[in-house]
Image (cartoon, rainbow over all chains, first blue to last red; front, side):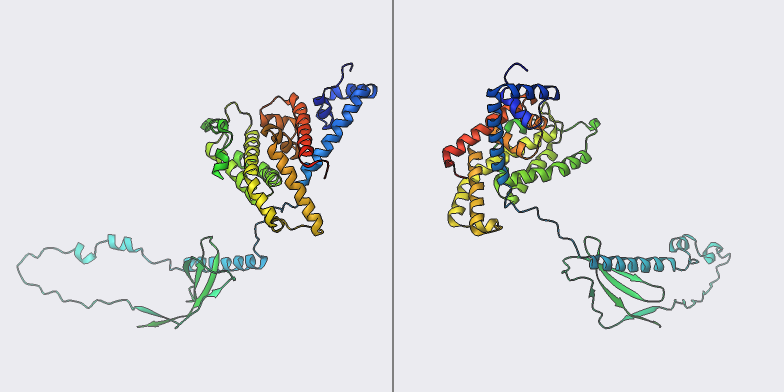
Length: 196
Length: 195
C-alpha cells in the first residue's frame, strides 16, 4: 500500500473491520510510514480512552429484576391437589349408572296407555280410578355444620371459582381454583345420606 | 414516555407499514426479534440514562410501536436496525431531559441512593461523578456521533451500525473516529484532563 491510510481505515483496522485483503497491506505500510504509525497510535489511544469512558457507564447499573419464582414446595402441592381433584372428577363421572335412560329419550316416548286408548263406543261414563303416584324416595343430604377451607399456600385469594368434586362413596370436597387455574384451597364435605 | 418517543425521528414514525398477510412475517418473527434485542437495548439505554427502569420503559415503548405498526420498513432496512435507531434517539432525548433532574438529585445527594456503591464511599462518588460527566458530554454531542458511540460500545458490528444509522458501511470507521475525537475534545474542554 503506497498511499497513507485514512483515519477511518485505521479505526476500522483497530476494530478488525478492515477487509482482509487490506490488512496485510496496511500492516506493511504502517511499518514503513512513520506518519501513519503515529496516527495509528493516536487513533488507538483515543479509541481506548473513549471506550473506557463508555465502559464506565456500566458501573453501578443494577441488573434486570428477575421474575420471582414460586417455591418448589408450592408447585408440588399444586400438582398433588390437581391430581387428586382430577381423580375425584374422573371417578365421579365413571361411576354413574350406565343403564339409566336419558331423560330426553323417556319424554319422547308417549305413555302406552295413551297410545292404545280407543274412544268409547257408548256414552257410558267410565270412572278412572286415580292411582297414587309412587314417588321415588327423595334423598336429603345433610352437610356437616361448618367446614373451613384449608389454604394450600400463604398468598391471599383475590378471586376464585369453587368447584365441588365428589366420589361415589359420598366423599365430597370443595376446591377453590383461582384465575390461573391453580387450586388454592380445599375443604372436605361430610355428607350423610338418609332415606326419607 | 410517549412524549420522549414522539419527540424524535418523525420520519421513522411514518416509515412503518403493516405487512401484507402473504409476506409470512408474524408474531413469531417479532418475538424472536424482541428476545434477541430487548436485553441488549435495555442494557445500552441503562448505561446511557443511568436508570434501568426508564430504559426498560423506553425499550418497551419502542417495541410496542414496532408491534403496532409491524414491518416491513419501507426503504428503512431491517427492523432491528430501526429499533436501535429509534431506541438510541429516544435514549438521548431522555438523557437530555434528565439532565436538570439529575443535577438536582446530585446536589441533594440522592444519587447515592439510586445506585448502591460497591467499595468505599469515595470510590462510589468518583464513579458516579465520572458517569455523570460522560453522560453530560454524550448529551452534548451531535445525535449521530452519540449514536455511533453508543451502538459501538454496545457491541454492534460496523454493518449493524451502518444499517441502524442509514449510512454506508465503509464510512463507519471514519465517522466513529470523528465521533471519538469530538467526544474527547468536548470532555477535555469541559472537565480538563481529570479522570
